[in-house]
Length: 311
Length: 281
Image (cartoon, each protein chain N blue to C red):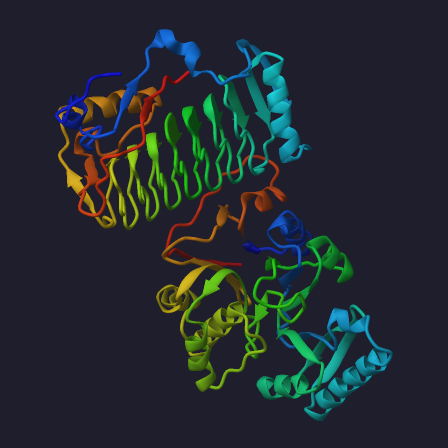
């Protein structure tokens, strides 16, 4: 069934890591297999931030060579970045298999992303000026503590708790999905698209590639493709209500916006809280209550409804 | 058992549009038979015996067990504080009880109840009062989808807006919505009455077998076999009385409401379940 959540502060930044952790932890019963965060920190206009992994969590517990393999994969990534004139300003090894780089780069970002992902075992989780995407196995508390998200400052964030149904329990199948290779677009989704392959082939014919077989990734690429063609996010989301077939509620985030859309059957839940300076949304009100214990007014968006908020 | 024929007065009132025949029975209970409405093992509670219960740190099972224990101690008025939108709170209460929630409930709140009078000061999530059999539930703020799904009796009131599929498969009772409802409200409705004071979403009353829907605002569109009925004076007087009970107003006026009934082209069952007209205890 999965749980999705999002929040956006208008005109200020806050400890979004702690807030989203609380929201996702309260949705654990909707999916305990993996948890993902798409956090939007204070945007770096000159530099890029990239999170990538060089192995799956389960790989680390298998075999004798994996430690050396991970080192070799990271060294290859470093070499390819240097080859493409990407200058690493700072780097952090977040877990045994996950890294965070801040770097400067003036070239073709898609070419760089393709070159890095070509390294066997390496996968970019996110790449952009503000987006940092963290996903791993376990509940929100575990992932947040593992990646030190408790003091992450930023303006907005979306997240997901996953109950694996049609694919494995691994990081590759965990949400949120980054719209490879577009900057700063991420999506979390609760539902199922029934015209996934038709739409995927349409996007592949236009040159997009997919890192998974998950329908949520398709929504991310679909919207990023529209934004790339100078279509407004809200306009693309309205179009998605009619072009994407199935039952779904999804939340999308870009560098400065959070949006939600609900299909015309309204079969998947979503609860909203909106004030002048803050918006929170989640599959269940209990998630919003985790950061607002006092009485607040919440409501369900209706069938076919699209909302977008600016940070 | 009341004597019924094909031209029963309720047909003219628009309350029951089905033509009763064959094995269909309608049973009316008398107030003096009140003791027959209680379940075996029901608690003898005193409405003047009141207690407050703070459930901030309790889980669902512990809350429902505690509510039952308090009824066993004779408490007839229970005020629940800090419900925190927790799921499945106050379910399966088959007893007379005044139950007040100071805050919001999550999914499946007060489902499967038969008898209590419930007041909720906040909002409720999906499937509030599902399968309710008797009693009253009044929600002061908004409600999620499938509000009052499959209810069989009692009055279920939301003073704010309600999500999709309100009163889906309802088999009796009355649902009152002070604001608007979403799509597929009254889907496969079989009996009962739904009053929507604001707008109604798409496919209103889709595939309804029977029952009546009153709408005060705009209707996005009607579902299959849902058709406009004629508002009678009996409809208006019943609506005035019912809405006044819960202090709910229709912005465009009760006289201007639209009445929706089944066109009976899709389904037409004569052999309905026996109807019970139960007292609101």
